[in-house]
Image (cartoon, rainbow, N blue to C red):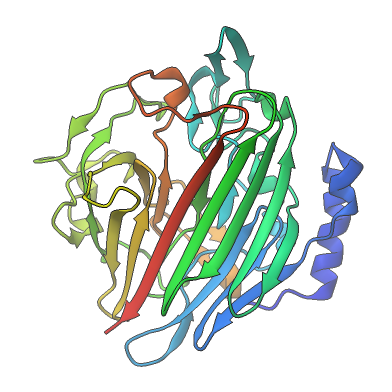
Length: 358
């Protein structure tokens, strides 16, 4: 990963103090870069947006490379619209018309995607400074954030935490939790890392082999808002039940993959297998499990020559996102699994990645 200088951090902090409208406790916090490392496996994370900056892994020959997209310096994450590596919320993905009704009250959210609200609004959790609660380099880091009643239009105070931790050999787990303190509220957090297993600067991901353990999708309209239907993928370009290259059917779609898959039920009540991603040249393989009902499969269709780390220029299809989640716009679709958390309840979202190379 490119080095981030003290000067860059200083400039970033100065900009952030001006950028923040809610100066108070946010302005008093400092932005840092933290590392988790075990052998050749290392992860760098910042408390700005609880954002993954790099994941360095060996390939089949032992060569190390950074396999996630990101920026050269921290200040580039200000006003970022790619959500590189960030935790997004209070509600990930889109909410139609930036509004919903809950327990008889109508809530209007901040529209930041046309008339819709995307990834929590104008200043979602990807654009706040999280508190570092604990950090041990060889095991974990935990961030916390106190989300206030009315933030971006959402009801109720919410206590949020995210832990990145090593979980056995070659495994990285992410645990997202949120406790509703005084009002019922929707919660749907997501981890928004862009992966390229050949290396972040290697080009597109069209030759990556992907298998998704999902027989259905939630179709969307021209604004990427779910229609409310749940349809089978068999016989469509969305069918990844058997592994195949991303690029093999992508031309049959208007603009690449950006859709929520309904994960298949399994005998394990707690975890579902989400995906297997393989890249043949490096030999790297990534497997993913979660306790959530869906996953957004996104092939970075909206990247347009984004200036990234080490002088890389990220173009369309430079990375893939596998954002485990509740179904998008579930607040406006009673037939979707509910994402409402009542006072005293705890939202829990777990992801487990396993990396190998052969």
